[in-house]
Image (cartoon, rainbow, N blue to C red; front, side, top):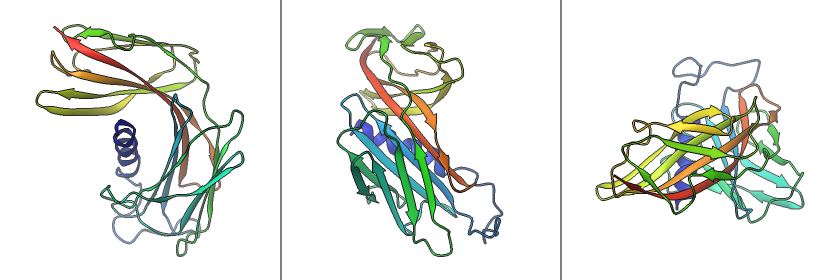
Length: 229
């Protein structure tokens, strides 16, 4: 369930913002119908990869055409996530192959030309601090550390907290891939007694055939911590 929450939050952030187009009619751009296309891969520690696609034109992702993904000797046609407020395309590969890209093809959507995209997973990494199962203080900053930092790379961190008053989800933090970030008490805004899944992702962009398309792969890892005084 935590993976589904993470995927939907990130897809909403990617597809629900300013589209850079005129309001209403959607002006023609270079002879192509102006959809915004967002293609995503999230790979987890167990080797599984969740796939997502947002085909955005006006206010929410739309159900138009077919989205297919190939990876090594695997192929899947993405289906719709009926639990979300829009028509997200989603799918899963049970395993991932080293050194093999993910190739997306979106086709058959009205006047939109077919869109293709290709992306490789970013380098592997491990969260070294805090240790899973440890306790952190609600009154002090939390230092998040990981292996294999790259000076020009990009990471994203966030958390899902289960507290007495309910659940908190926050996945909106981008930081350089320096191997270390200090999370302030304002950013990790949880109280004593909460259980927290602290997430970290290494990001890598790919290439697409369409100027309004974005494709990105991430390696997603997390640690479980509890919050003390």
